[in-house]
Length: 252
Image (tube, rainbow, N blue to C red; front, side, top):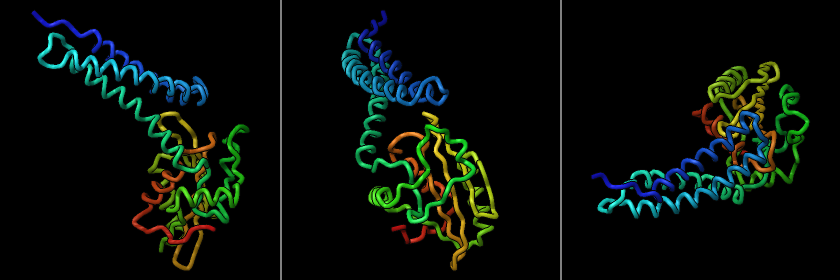
């Protein structure tokens, strides 16, 4: 005779599936324009709270259905522990980053004369964040939170650097809005996977005695804090350009 299922283990596993689905749809629903990001974040918050209930049920269920007991469902309970733990961890991790990083959404390798957007401006919409650089205040916050963000110096000619930069942006999956070698400017939009947030990037290539200087600016369309996304995007772009070390100079 087969052992009966542990109802608590199955309930915990089912609850874990629900919070995973809720967390996933909170982001994809915004990406698919079903609701705004405020509603998506509210859903994610509810999924995080629900994950603690699911986690508790799964832990109890695992104890009741552990090997050697009279109930089945131990494996389901363990899977539920893992799933609900992930749902609880993601918002906690993001909240830690929000508290640790400066509340800014405009990151540039040149804080004195940041690259300017041109072609991408009509795409941002009237409710988007401004692309007017906030000046010394935001520059100080950037230096505090992202001291490694600096221009990229390469021995390549401006033309070769432009071609390499365009290839790197394309390889990263950015949507190229404009590529103007005459002005040494590339503009692109990067869309995040989960919530579908659109962040705009402008790349500026200029001739310097060493060869070429590549400056990048990445600006979020919505939100007060980018939780490090724009700085990470610039680092990823420079990694694609490598192997060349970033310049050891920062803007003031």
